[in-house]
Length: 237
Ligand code: SF4
Image 1 (cartoon, rainbow, N blue to C red):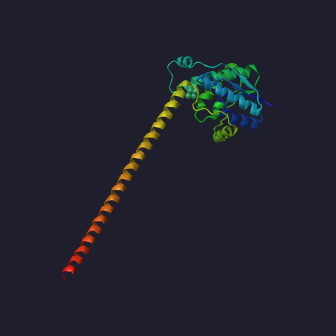
Image 2 (spheres, rainbow, N blue to C red; image 1 turned 120 degrees about the vertical axis):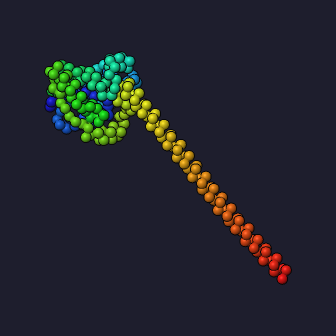
Image 3 (cartoon, helix red, strand yellow; image 1 turned 45 degrees about the horizontal axis):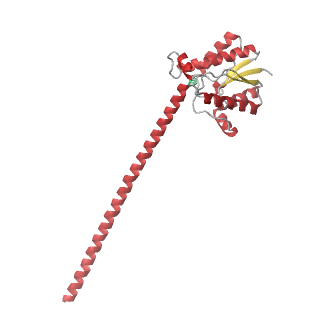
């Protein structure tokens, strides 16, 4: 059976690539190397989730690297901090490390679970992986795992695998938190707007009721006056 080194960014993204590669007849080995997942506790959570996946799928896991320093990563970007620009610089060390290890340990090919995420740039990953493959004499296997997106999400939930809330780096974390704050503020504003609208509507209903009651009281008063007038006239005659 041909052996493939599967670079893995996290537990949930590994599930479907593992299944698909096994179905194709590959014998996968997971490879944890992610030098810009921040902060430290997030890096540890994702690594532990991958260990869980390796155990559940009964596949070997090779771990490389230690908890990374966010400040060092940002410095290394040399100002290319925009989403997309920085992502190519994020794929590069991963693909280089995977290619080097695949060549050194005689794997028939290497690939990455980054190709499962619909948020990643496939062209950029392919470019970085092929450069790594050429440099170390390894074979890169391209697969588009994105059609398995929902299957992977459902499986990770069923298995209770830790699911992250941002892509990985400190910048993506800040962006995700800012988006979340924005969404919460939008929701709170919509809630307040709805409450104000309901209060105005309730006030309108109360005023209408009051006006109806006042009209009815006026009618009743007139009716009483008519009856009293008739009674007085009857008495006089
Ligand atoms: S957003 Fe994701 S892919 Fe892009 S640099 Fe950050 S961790 Fe890497």
